[in-house]
Length: 239
Ligand code: ADP
Image (tube, rainbow, N blue to C red; front, side, top):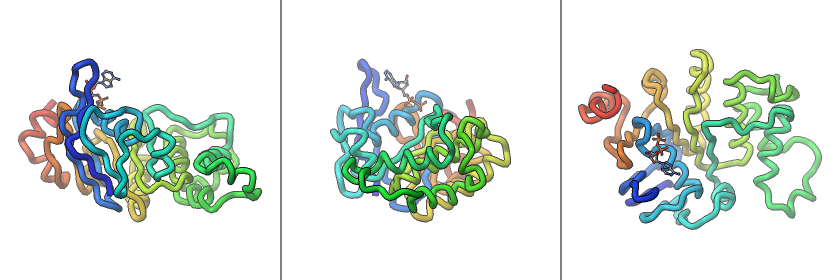
């Protein structure tokens, strides 16, 4: 589904990614961890077309993503969140979802759009559990609800692959739990890659974990294998 081979990213002579190989099969919920500066965000930037690699290949569903523009990659079914929120506070929850769904469409189809809520918006609303808040302004949402709205906005774009950068940062315990369940549900019919640091969250919700360190994949395996690995303890857990 997603396959990175020998990906290199260089910033002013500094190798942010140094030969990354990563395969994520369709329908997997994969967690990406690693200390600050390991290259996690850079890896997501490369997959989503924000950063062009100096070498290597990024293949998604059999297509090479390198050299494609960000909006083209969204249309191919790759959605991402950022660490900073992108929800429109002055719009309601449902308007945010509708906007996301609309902008995924080619322009010609906008003129033909029927009034009312599209199926994608309705599904995104139900899945994120925001039905009761549909008509509320996004500006009044709690931090957790905003994060769910942002995930909902991605879902409204009907992606195949979702890349989520620290979705539970700043959430309460209950919100984390709900997010863990949401991610597992989403992975039923999507491929999901989540950057996350919270070990307790990983122990509860992670199946396969990839550890990045100094621009390379250090270890990959179950959360138990990864956290027991002395190399991981040295670079990450033992910090
Ligand atoms: P992580 O997300 O794992 O914390 P990043 O991918 O953000 O790590 O960064 C990896 C390394 O690349 C860091 O040392 C960071 O300072 C560097 N880096 C990231 N983006 C840029 C950039 N645009 N210009 C220069 N260096 C960058």
